[in-house]
Length: 216
Image (cartoon, rainbow, N blue to C red; front, side, top):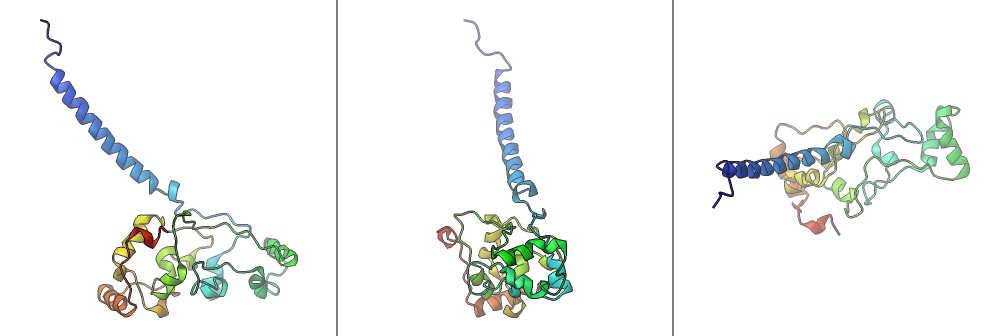
């Protein structure tokens, strides 16, 4: 009876199986890199706005505190966006006739709010509360980066689940004194591990990594 498989059949089968497994591994790595790339996460890409707002100018140059515009960040899930009246508190006198600020003046005159484009958008199945994080020593720059140095605002972190879990699993690495939460220039000191553990105990912070913490 004629032999069905030749002498090299076993080697070919091993090569095919090994190549398939290797190909799947490479495909998995490529997909992982893709979903975490700026092309998908939009990290580092400024978002077009109806008015080219510069945090660098307002925060660093003019010294305006985050809470002047984001008024509910300390007591609400949403940080809040400023009403046009807040803008006009200054711009009724400063750059009052600038063409760049025409959308602001039109909004103030009509009573229709400016439709700002969100820079950081979480999926609908994710619950996030700004006030809980702020009240427990998580600084603005931890998630949003050095916004005070951005002429145009962009994401500095992917805001994917792995980013959140890094903090939720070990909050001591990220918490800071509450009086430094809005200090954009704050940097972790050399003894952050020790300081973080002290703050975690003082603020009664729990390492919450159960699914229903964020997915409700």
